[in-house]
Length: 285
Length: 281
Figure 1 (cartoon, rainbow over the protein chains, first blue to last red):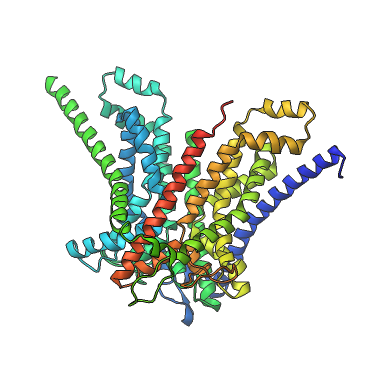
Figure 2: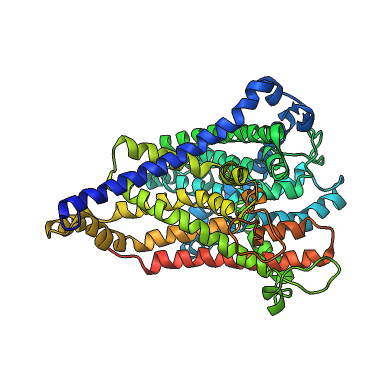
């Protein structure tokens, strides 16, 4: 094959296919492994006892992760309550009100917000937000409220950039038509642009949820990690991600398998959310 | 009628005010984060902090040298694993736009991109940590490289797709073999995009902590062996931040400052590369 160009060419094509195949294999193995490691316990303990079980005591044979599933959704909705209105207004401001120079400055600045490591968010939460919640509102400070605030900030870049794109993709004629009919700018935004960009905006919220539910470091640092369903926004809680992060380093045997099952549940939730979001984005375009 | 018009205008202004207020509030966290990290972190940074190992609580001084070298080592390891795979898979996708294998790979890339880092950490744990029975730099590198992979594949594919087809045709028409066309024509034209993708993915993994908790673990001593646990800046921040000692908190500020400067610099360089080195067709 040394001097024959045709053979060499065939060889290169073959290398490309092998690499593509192996990266496919790689990705495939990842999901295989997660499910193979996580599923035996579902068989042994029972799906119902894991997903709807209230007690997590893996060394004693209790693998209930229901409180963590509820907690994960609670912090996610909390993050959305804080992040969605702020992010959406920011996207509206960027696309409809701000001048060109302001846009040139604000967009990269907001994208930098996404580049700040989550452990730094967690640290700032521990030092500033937790004491504020403790002193002014009550409880220990390590709470659903503090976690929701931090996660709400963390999902801002996702919400802003995707809803900005979908607002910008609304045709200019829609705006002009509405303004020409005598509608004010606000009426145009509220009645014409937002409905037209609706699916993209919803997709940005769902992707933000996906980001919040998969977030680990900030959550284990400020959520308090208590093993129960919080009864108020000032109670501590433990999420699915937190459960894996806190215990996997020292877990063995069935305990380890229990944490893998937690990972399976988490992965399934996130895959469903991303599927819905992609559906929304596809319908838009 | 007059009153009705005025009411609409007033409403218009009120909502404009609300939107601007919220936009300002959402910019506030970035400013506050940068302000607090600079204020608390910059005074901790000195030569000793950068070149000494951590000391036990009670002893003054010490630094995060092992965490800095550990982070660099993890980045190098994950680049070694992910860059060749990512770029070649990206080339394959752009060369074969349709086809079952391509669409399967694309689907996997999308799913992998949405997979939370902690689940990727579990993979590295199952593959490397459990068989070797020890936490190791290698397992941390593998976990981070799996996180880099989708970003690199995606950006390589998107960049190479934008290269005009006649460039490739011209090269092939001159009798240049296929592999040389890829190496000498297609890759150099897409260099800025590919490099941007690599830098962005490195920025993404530099601050990543969750998968390292049970792969690279952490180590208060210097370590160059990739089969032993290794320290990293984000892990050190986590460790110090969760400790009850105020001295360690100041160390966490210093480490946070270094980490934030590092990730922001990578992001800015990536932006610069994508603008400055861009080739216009």
